[in-house]
Length: 145
Image (cartoon, rainbow, N blue to C red; front, side, top):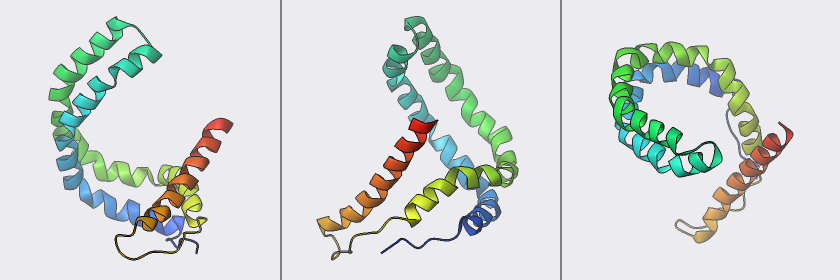
């Protein structure tokens, strides 16, 4: 059974009309994510370092993220980000459609396996079907770009 979703235009209209009113949620969640941002950025330095540059760059990133970044990020969210959030969401409608549209079409094309009883392990096959389809689409998109 294929997955039934809203049309891309309806999803975009909903996102651009409802999401701007959620600036308070954005502010609260973005500020709450600062510690994870810092931790995850620092934890990712070895990967970045081996892929891109040497120790000097990693030390600059660590200093910037753990020091200035951790202080500036929440202050900028409160001072600028929250006020511009709704405007930014409304302006991003076409980009939302361009980015989400291909994934929505993939989701709409998935034939879900039958649903099992609540808690059944076989229900994860439904999640896997969507995840596998999205992964294949992403791999194809990155291979062609």
